[in-house]
Image (tube, rainbow, N blue to C red; front, side, top):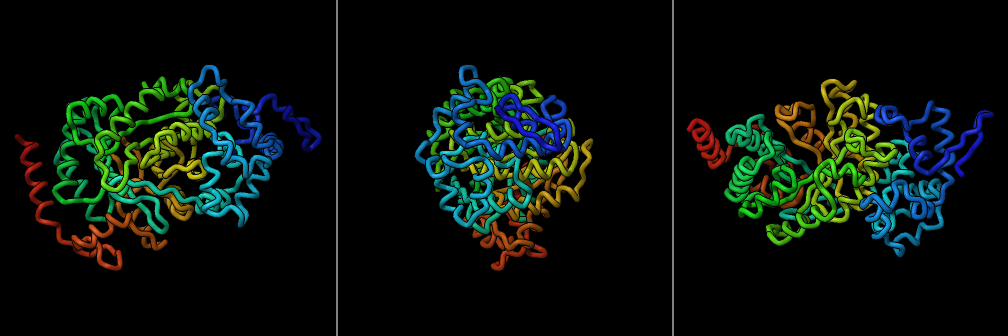
Length: 466
């Protein structure tokens, strides 16, 4: 069915799933899974064939069988034919050309989002250069709200990530205050707990709530515990703003995470019932990453980028405030070096934005990957140029609890100064009010630490010794 001749060689791709995998730019995870093209010639042949595939084909040939995968059922059952009508006559290659044309305005891209399936956007990304991914993603605009407004034009937000290897309140608070004084934290103040248990989660939730309420910070908090732990915390009356969960693109992979669509729906409903948002009710926070399904042996024969994009259908179902691709976290078995990490991060951002999601990127790598901070500077800059919603703010870019390299508070300042970007408007006003930023939105050279910050750190430090 999917066949071409190139350089006097005949390439026969038996299924759409096989064609998609062979057309994917090279990455170590696909070689590990045994689905990658054997060489660049086969890859170009697959991309040539893929460009001629009608977009409608993706509605008729499921890459993972409808009967045994609830993610596939979600994609097909909730597809919006009306939104799809504008582009339904196009092939994958035609779709690429349309996306790059002047006709694909921000409003036009918003209008078709519900008519796109993850497989369609994954397919078109495979035949696009980095500049194509950046240009189209830049035109997408996804705005979400909880206690502030994220995703506005010329804005760039950060997740303040004050992790601590023992969940020490004083250690968390020290990193938290440091980040706030650099203007970080408008996307969320989010902690990865060292231990995923109810007691630790409750303690951290109460700490973050106290800081936000005491200083009247227009932001939201999240403890990135398993969704079931957060639901138990809600039952105990904890101050939960955002409900977090890692998600993947197949039912089998989500089973390995201990979740399904019904559980996420229950959690979403619980978050809405709390009604803690002041400007909006986008109360979910999802994280994803290429290779997560393969690492659980749950990729269903798909290439890892297509699997990743299917996870965005799960996220889209629950109207999240934030979606974050933790692009280099899993390791070199899946994304070997800086080149692969950069490509993956820009693919994920493009695909998520095209599907209507508020995409952030944890610009990161593990210490055993063939990557360094220069590679991350390249991805960081390109992601910001592409209109990315948010990045991480980690003290010194070195997460001492998760043991990986990410982006620092200074990196956020670099991007904002380089490109003239600003924090979320409500958070920006808070920074100016407390003289952390001046009216020109430049960080003050020697900002005075607010007295309450000093008192909080002193109290928490004393509590750690009790």
